[in-house]
Amino acid sequence: QPLAYNYHDESLTLKTVEQNPRLRDNIVVLGTVQPHGEEETVALFQVKDLPIYASSFHPEKPQFEWRSDLQINHSEQAVMANGHLAQSFIHLVRRNTNHFKAEADVESTLIEASVSKFEAWIPKDEKQGYFVEIYLLQ
Image (cartoon, rainbow, N blue to C red; front, side):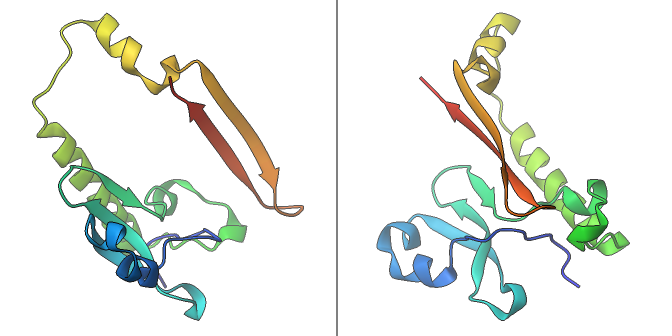
């Protein structure tokens, strides 16, 4: 059973990365997944020259999501592997020595300070759907 929980209808395929020079030259694929025998997709990547990482899976789900209809692996190995990934990200963030001089400076830069925010639940069927949160930044 997979250690990570992948639940996306659309993902960046490895083939797309290999065929697109802008992607190929600017990201490092750190992990892939081939769900249900489908085309291999990018599960985790890093931007080459920036401290930016992205995942197409949900590392929080093995520990915190317990809906029986989702078939999430809750094994000790799944919880530990996804927790290790989270701790690795925290370690990278803590290496950053930048800081704000005043609390007011922090508040003004938070995403919640954005003027426009759109939230919606988009039903897929009677039991499933997607929560969408879009921030329009100035």
